[in-house]
Amino acid sequence: MRRPIGKGSRTVTFVVKKYVPEKQGFDESTCEVQADPFTSVLDALIGIKERSDRSLSMRYSCNMGICGSCGMVINGKPRLACETNVFSLGSSTITVGPMEAHPMVKDLVTDFDEFFSKHQSVKPWLVREDRVEQFEARREYRQTRNQVDFFLDFAHCIKCGLCVDACPVSNTNPHFVGPQALGQAYRYNSDSRDQGEKDRLDDLDRLDGIWGCEFAGACSEVCPKGVDPALTIQQMKIDLMKRRLLGRGSGEKRAR
Ligand code: SF4
Image (cartoon, rainbow, N blue to C red; front, top):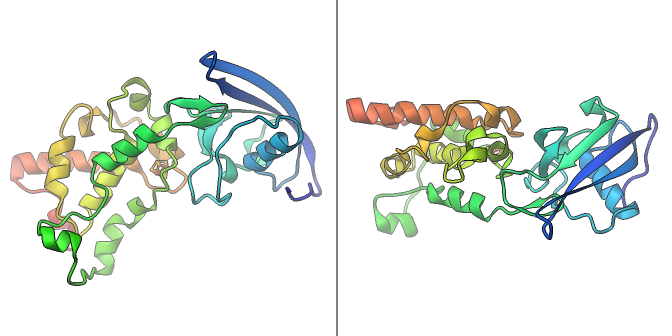
């Protein structure tokens, strides 16, 4: 049951673009929604599902910008529905649709298998050269504040996939590793406890990897957590060039 609509409410028109797998195309449904200054797009969609379109499929969970489940295209831009306030959009008509750079399943739901397999491909975990230590760690790896600050901003990724949906390269080249996975490669490369940087950079030193990025910056613009994947990819281009020209990567950053 949703909270009652409060003071200052007004009617907003929602146009929901629903993917229909049987026709591999879209149906549009239009609904009038009562919204107040605290109504999010997710609140409005749940209201539509409860009152007028019970078959509407969408994915959501935490309703507080943590789980990354409710990514969708709202008024032409990939956003989290739970974090998007209806009035903040400044429009009496709001159009909602699925993220089209991900394979579509039904209505607003998209498939994330490929997204997570690209994420996994960059080894998003701490790699240790000592195999025993990798799987049965025997000591603590303490870090200075500066060492933590080197990767902390990039560790806030909630895997919502908005950056991939905004990326013009991901939208045209399905083989491109994409801003989320590349950002996470850099997050671990920048961690003083990690020893996997060489393998990650060698693997991503290709046109579908780091060099596929055209630095449009759209990924960083839509990221709800300020991860700035565009910055991480440019930084890895520099790290790769340092390795080629000077024989060293980002190790000197960690030592500060
Ligand atoms: S980098 Fe940002 S936009 Fe991309 S998946 Fe992570 S949190 Fe979402």
